[in-house]
Length: 273
Picture 1 (cartoon, rainbow, N blue to C red):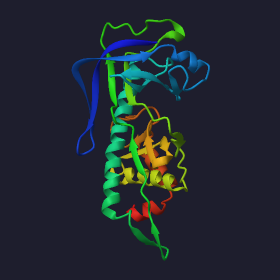
Picture 2 (picture 1 turned 180 degrees about the vertical axis):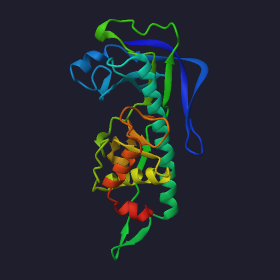
Picture 3 (picture 1 turned 30 degrees about the vertical axis):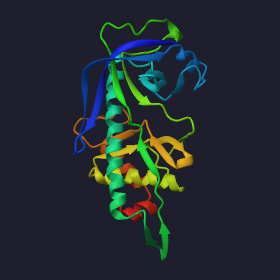
Picture 4 (picture 1 turned 135 degrees about the horizontal axis):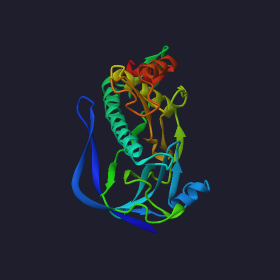
């Protein structure tokens, strides 16, 4: 079963110079949220009963928006309402920044001719493209209207934990989760898709002029068309506002650590990184 809530939508945009911002729209919309998903979380049964999965601090479960299944993300009950909104806003901004830099990465790919043959160690090699994107399609912040009761059912039978939530497009069923790096560990992947992800990470540091490093790269691999949908990143950012991207944000020290661990691969070399 589902609970239905009235909410206002928040949309994240990124300016041409890479500054993200959130604007809350005035229109009121409705969304349905599955009930009872927490029971399956406690039983450690992901993808059952509308429960998708959980991370260190966040739960993801089923919603229905405009007759379409979506994924809803919120912080778990170990946190509070204020922290939930703060972290969700950081996540939205970071994922939008991720797509901003993904666009500039593919601009670099096309400009530098990495899809063509290039000379490496005396041999012509072909760099094959991999379709990568962030899960930003139809992504938005939802804020339940003041006065709406989000604790309609006791214990494991509830739906929303907090009045603020993120809506993501539900990932396709024909995919598989893969983690390419940790927050502190650079894996230096050796397969083609892994090399593309690593090269993207290197590009972000350079394209941001050493002010941003996107880490903990992970996503949903759809093998049949060689597509990767990235989600749930972390970041280090050199800004005056310390911990801009959460408690794990290690600032310039994290960026320097990444660059020390990263080993350039054939994609990096083809792009002149």
